[in-house]
Length: 231
Image 1 (cartoon, rainbow, N blue to C red):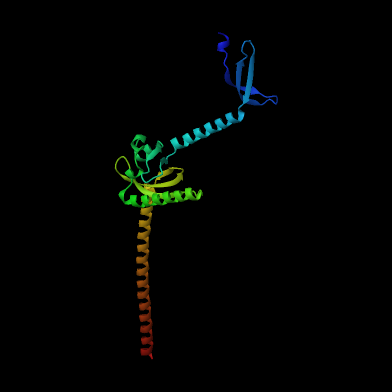
Image 2 (image 1 turned 60 degrees about the horizontal axis):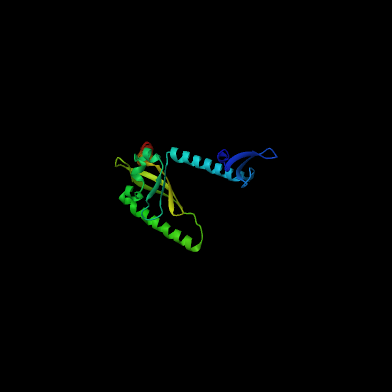
């Protein structure tokens, strides 16, 4: 019974002759018919370090995707563009829970006037992806697009997405630019008003200058006439 409790395989940290900490798998087998055992030690330090590096990278990626204010989504790379993943920021941006989005088409939320252009763009990249596969070339497919997206309240928000085609999926990083667009419109309207005002001021100054010139000429003619009379 005591022998059965001894583990036959386990992981351990070992100290090498150089004083380094190494990770290993220790395998213990009993020699049949004896009380002696054979032990193998496999050095898995590099594998353990690779796993730990991967774990840290995944943790960093999770922190980024779950805490950024931008929406990060993955959809299928086809004409339906079905949502496969969406990060929690969709709640902050649009009011949706993840369950409201996953499994639905990207185009279910897009303004009708924007759908045609986006579908045309998607078709172009599907054809390009097919050509890449046939030719064996790997040409990066990246695009920045703007569109209107309906939030949970039913309002249209202006969005800007950077799309990357990764294998058979589309990775989209999206931000709300509605406030930026509104501010830009106000600035353009203000500049237009100032432009009109400057044109009006220029026109009035020009007219006033013409009046002043006319008066000066009239005064000059009057002065000449007076000299003639004095003669």
